[in-house]
Length: 453
Ligand code: AMP
Ligand code: GLY
Image (tube, rainbow, N blue to C red; front, side, top):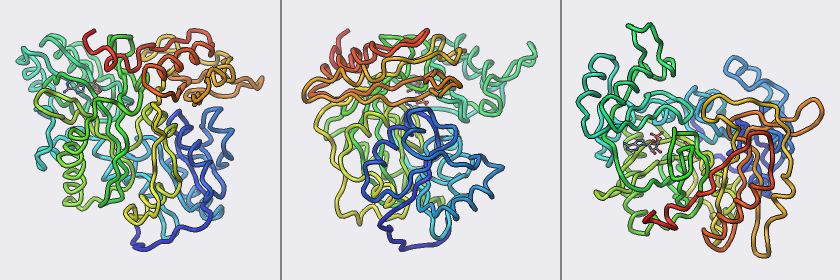
C-alpha cells in the first residue's frame, strides 16, 4: 500500500462495496446508516436486495478491468473500497485499488494468503506457537495417501487453496481419508483430475479435533485489534450437524460458549500473535481477521483463518452493531483504530440468522425460482423484536421479480431477548419466505441450548 501515514477521514466518504452476497447486503445495511456516507456504489453482480441499497458501479469489477476501475474510482472520488469476499482479496485487489487518497478495507494479497493458502497459514501458526490441530502439508499425492492411510483415529483433509467453504472433508476412517485425497489431488490411475483444480494441488491433513466451534472476528488495522462478539456458525447442511460442509447454514451471536476467560485466551494466544507473525513477515493486515476456533478439552484451537467477514456470521454481527460502522471501516483501513473517539456497541439482544437454500445445495442447484414473502417475514417481529431479511443469492428477472440465483438464497436474521426466542422468530420468519425447493436448518443455536442431545 502506498505510504500515507496520516490520512484524515473526510466529512463525507463515497464507498465502493465489492461483493454481492448476504455478507455484503448486511455491510451495506450498516454503512447506509452512517452520517458520514456520501454515495454508496455496489457491485454490478450484487443481489437484488443489495442493489436496492446503492448505485451499481457501471464498470465491470474484475482483475482485467482494474485499470479502468481505478480511473472510475478517481472520477467518482471513491474514498473507501470495502472488499467483502476472499477471492478478490486473495487476487490482490486491495493492492490494486489503494492510492494516496483512497483506502481499502481488506488485506492485500500477502495478508489474504492466511486464508488462501492453508499450508502457509499452518506454517505461520507453527512459527508463532498458535494452538491449532497437528497437521502436515503435502504437495505430492503418494505421501499424502500413505499418511492418510496411517490415520486410524480419523483426520481432516483440506484443499490448501480457496474452495468456497467446501474444500474440507472430515474423515472418520483411513479409507475415507484416502478417498478425500484422491478427490482433491486427482487419481492418475482412473484419469481423474482434482475436484478443486489448483486449490487442491496442495492438501493439509490434520488431526480431527472435537468440541464446539466458534467464530471470532476482529477488526485489525495492521497493529491494533478490536475483537467483535463471538458467533457460532453451522457449516453442515443437515439438522444435528450431519451431511457435507457448506459455506454456512446459519449463525447466531453472541454465543454463550465464549466466557471472558476463553475470549481473552483467544485474543492473547491467537489473534495478537498472528498479527505479530504477519508483521515479522513484513505484512500489514488491514481488515477483518476471522479465527475459526474449536473449543477442545485442551483449550481453544484454530481450525482456520479467514481474511474477511464470515458469511453468514456477518449478518447477525451487523444486525447487532450500534455505532458508525463506516467510521470503523475507515479507521481500520487507515491504521487508526486506536484513535476512534467512539466505538461500536452491540445491541444487547441475541441475533440468530437462518439461511434459506436452494434444493440440492451444497451440490448442484437450479436458479430462477420466484421468491415471495420477504415483507411477511419482516412483519413476524413482535414488540421488542426485529427481523431483517438480508438477501444472498438473488437477482431480478426480466419480469422484475426477485428470483433465486445461488445455493444460499436468503439470510433471515432475527433479534430477540434470548437465543431461544431469536431462533424461534428466525424460523417463523423463514417459514413465510417461499421459493421452489427452499430448505433451511431449524436448529441454529440448538447445540448450546440442548448440550446433551
Ligand atoms: P475450515 O474451512 O478449515 O474451517 O473447515 C470447515 C469446517 O470443517 C470447520 O468449520 C469444522 O467444522 C471442520 N473442521 C476443519 N478442521 C477440522 C479439524 N481439525 N477437526 C475437526 N473438524 C474440522
Ligand atoms: N461462514 C464461514 C465462512 O464465511 O467462512
